[in-house]
Length: 80
Length: 240
Image (cartoon, rainbow over all chains, first blue to last red):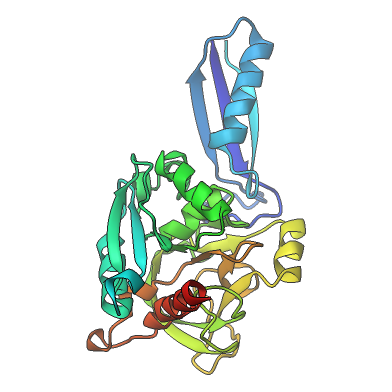
């Protein structure tokens, strides 16, 4: 089963990359762009019986390794 | 010093560490240490008086700086050593590893200016209640080199409360006169923090490199003061 974990800097945590990207987008003529958060995407193949188990597994992986909860937050979703 | 009195220092080597030999050289030159390099896959630290996690780019800084090194087998031994009160010093990437491992509070983010900074900075001693600052004076200014892209130390509100309540900020960036000034902080860290310790005060991490500034011959020996402070305290503890 394929699961996707998305990790981004928590709101309230300064994201220098996101800020730079927001600035570049504004210069490119996208004035309506507000806050930008630059993060990471992990696509994982996991062995799971169903979507709930796959999501739970991905959540554990995020909490143990993929995401640092001091500065980041994550979302896990099943891709199928 | 007799052989028995030589401080035993173990320096951990992760794949991608690049300041390990500098650390070995610095403690040999400054405090006559009996040194040992410990490969990350090992779990035997020897019987050290001090463990140093050196600077570098462990595991290529993949995922997050220090995030993968934290799971090296040697970190179990470091964790046990620290839990028994053993002194641990994390320098630059070593600081990042200690934060990722939860042995130190907070986390290190990309520098606020998004650039890798490689230059000399001044840091001020904020507490002398650690093995590495015990012989210094609060307010002392050290000039030390930095070389990092991710030195922007952050902590959540609750953690920051704990850190300040328990006097865990060890160093802050400052100007040459010891004042916290705009422009003195190279990475945007919270409250100009350059180094912190754990609640028990035996684990210390800092972004600047004392091992690169430990000999007058190299133009600056300020870093040696941290190692000498450690060695001075060790002698006192052994004879106590």
